[in-house]
Length: 420
Image 1: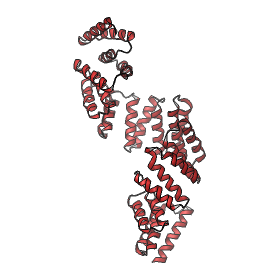
Image 2: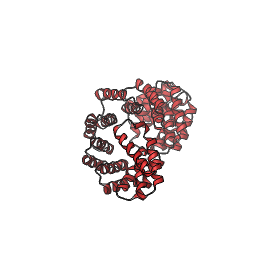
Image 3: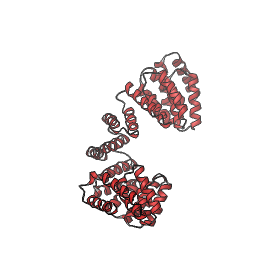
């Protein structure tokens, strides 16, 4: 900046202190027009707008200032904002900006403190509550985060971001129904937000409203213009829904499309592996799971997929090897391990893992109780074997109409009669 502009800024600062916000805004806008990279002008202009109740303009100014501030280091930005608060200790926007800077630097406790001060200084402004909610989330303070988002909604019911954040957090906490309700309101307010569309479609599917989820994704993929990486996640989600519905050909097309758009995401390879697994092409599934295992965040699930594929191929040694590695990665499949060890003749470890599947209420506890009956019979423990088969019959009552399960149930009854 030249000397004249520096003097103009000092005048604008004086006008601000005297409550002459119109004059301050006029000068600051002129400075920015001449020197668009001068950060102090943005930091003073945003609170000036806020003082006049022009919150959307204040919000836009903060975003523009944030882009300018990217040329500064995090420490420089925080130091600069702390200096601003020293000059203007009663203005919420300065506190908000500092709280946001702390949050972006991972200092969530400090962000919480500063953002709470922002909400006290301007009790009618909703925006600080959004970052306050995020700061609470990062600290695992779920109830406080929910309260922050709800406070933002009370102050501005038509803000889609507040409703989207609340809805997504409710989903994460297991309240899908209420979470989806909030996301639907947010979607009516802004149907162009990709993350919102993704989370809403995912929530609808989890509520067994898959037709609505697919319609939402179809509309988004046809109308929303965005980058290839973002589109890839929408295709993957639609592919996952088709997979759950058993429409494997459609699932295959969508997940392959996702990989074409963004080949760097391990989760996509895992899901494509699941499609081939369901189609019975276990070798292809294993190749894809191996590709997914290269990604740390997908490694456990991928190794489990490899292990289950080898179970279907009846390669028990490779199944155990993969499933034990999955266990080490934090993704254990007790039933798969129990079955593999049982088939290898290791009854002790077979029984241990099958029992763990049942005790931990695993998704395969019914199947585990069936094989546990045979494992106990092999060791000569007739009493435990009969007990396991009876438990299987009780757990499989709702499947009695399925032909495959009828065979299993008939065999279990036979085993009980023979050992009685």
